Image 1 (cartoon, helix red, strand yellow):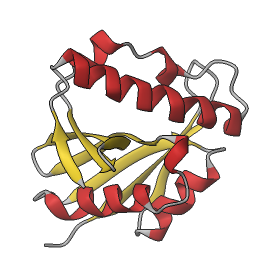
Image 2 (cartoon, rainbow, N blue to C red):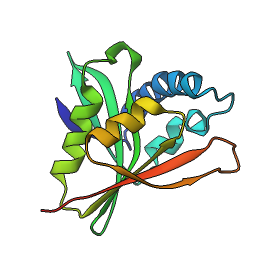
Image 3 (cartoon, rainbow, N blue to C red):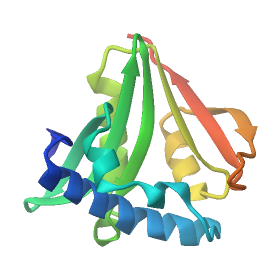
Length: 151
């Protein structure tokens, strides 16, 4: 159900883009943002990204995407999106468990809007703890969470 996506393939990048758009539109409404930077990503930006994309498939459909960056023993979750058609099925948790168990890392970082309480609750459920809050120039208050992995 979870497999790596070749984002350099434009057709795959388009599917990732559509999943991002569908999910991030809901998140923007949830947090009350009129401008939401993730919605500005393009197919070209996704296809040229050096991060790693993994998809969760249900009935051959791309239901969710997690975007990861690995630097030495640190994993950064850059995106974790579920298409609204697949909400409330535990898919985000499955992708998160995958990210936490699949890679030989010592720390995992993720950022989200402070108003995105469902995402914060998900990360905390898996042991993430808040370590920083800040207000970027775009005006959406963010927080960063971290978990230490002991292999």
